[in-house]
Image 1 (tube, rainbow, N blue to C red):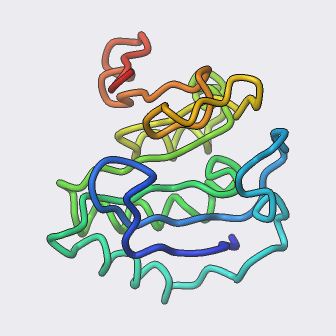
Image 2 (cartoon, rainbow, N blue to C red):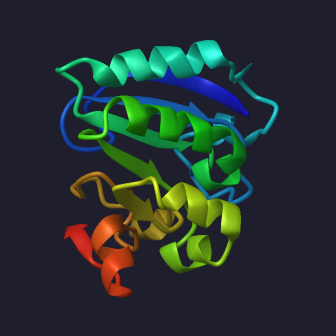
Length: 165
């Protein structure tokens, strides 16, 4: 897995002060994507155990509300992200994990590896960015088709449960 950046303090991509991992690689190629440079699977740096250890230390900080995964496409980097997310979950189980994806939740659930990563997530912002539906007033999403989903409640009930509008 490769990544474009790790932000120790991020207030734009989820509730509270978060640590964010921007993975590289995405085949969705949404028009006017805000991270077009991260669509290339060869962009950025190679992820190592040192990065996992660093992210865990950031998330364990009492001022950090949790971890956010974005990029690129986190669910096209599941094999690399799964051990990272599990390390964070093990070290700080009370912290919320968010993920942004161009996939809709039903598409994620249809794939074994993507579904395994989803099982570790608390909040999913799903759906491709649609430039015609862009709305700067939206909280934690770029276009109005995207949903902020409470993954735990959704998996329990079998129905999509929104975490917030």
